[in-house]
Length: 230
Ligand code: SAM
Image 1 (cartoon, protein in one colour):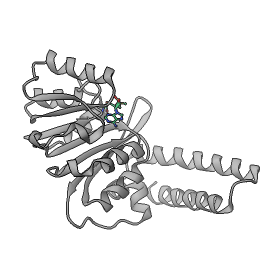
Image 2 (image 1 turned 60 degrees about the vertical axis):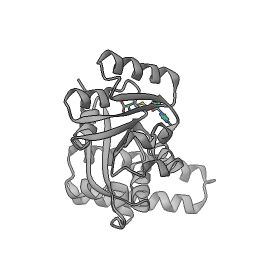
Image 3 (image 1 turned 30 degrees about the vertical axis):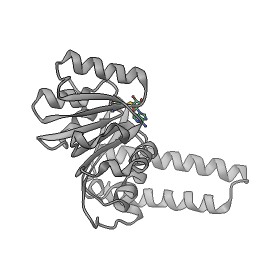
Image 4 (image 1 turned 180 degrees about the vertical axis):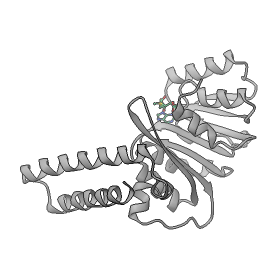
């Protein structure tokens, strides 16, 4: 049984895909999709020995060793041309790490048409990456589970992705168009946090004014969006 977070990621893996799940840990996502006949095979990549052993064990236990390969590798280096991977999932990490993994071995995405990404934080950076690397956002979700808020970003390869402004990149064009309770809760929390940081830096008087101005602008933007959607 998958968490709601991973079930949301799973929902956007096209039926019949060959999936690479990077940072797979227990390989729950690819195993779940194999069990339901939703993927035909793929790779479960892990850079850390312990989680890699977890993945290998889980795949063997469920009897998918012939179709799902656990690989101990850094990021996209888990993908070999002979895997014919067409979909990549990266879930449960920060946006900075997800972006670093995608950038580092970008050529390994040669046959990949869909990315399903679930940054725990830093979704803005991921959206910027997609826009500048030939991937068009096609769906977004935001959900609350166990006291955390998660965003899922889905993108398809496209030569000239749509250009988004700062607001769309920060909040997500699809999430802005259909804001739910999790969206409002996230940005209320972010506004509170930014306000707190501003109070601290203003009291300290050692932070460059440019930084303070940027934080003020960010807070104003969050407040505007909250006002609009509530
Ligand atoms: N994807 C699973 C999920 O969403 O439930 C597991 C998330 S777990 C919090 C993050 C995993 O990513 C860890 O097992 C970690 O070892 C792995 N990881 C971190 N950096 C990685 C990298 N560069 N390449 C492959 N795996 C990585």
